[in-house]
Image (tube, rainbow, N blue to C red; front, side):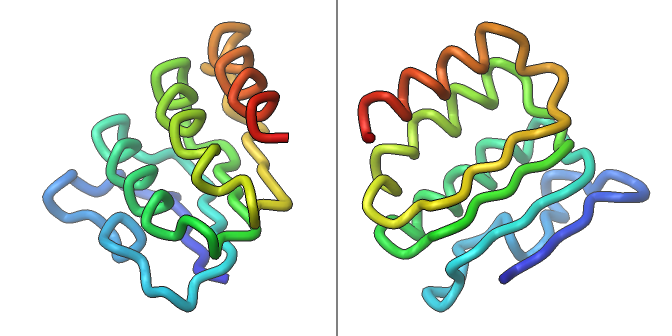
Length: 111
């Protein structure tokens, strides 16, 4: 498990925490809690995509995802379909119906 809590001041995109960089191959579970800047969502999702075929848990709880962030997550779900067992996007109130629909459609394609 590689945890990160975004509590406190939001990091500038150029000062991204380690999880926003290519993640080590041994990571199987990624739990991110707390707001992350919208500019970092794409980098986090890109790091998640690098774990294709290995990631079993993806928890992005309360990170401030909106519909566009949900679209980015939905885009990587097919590459995680063989191993991902837990997807937690709770407490992301900005997802709204549009974001939830994107994620559900992606899950429907891979289940």
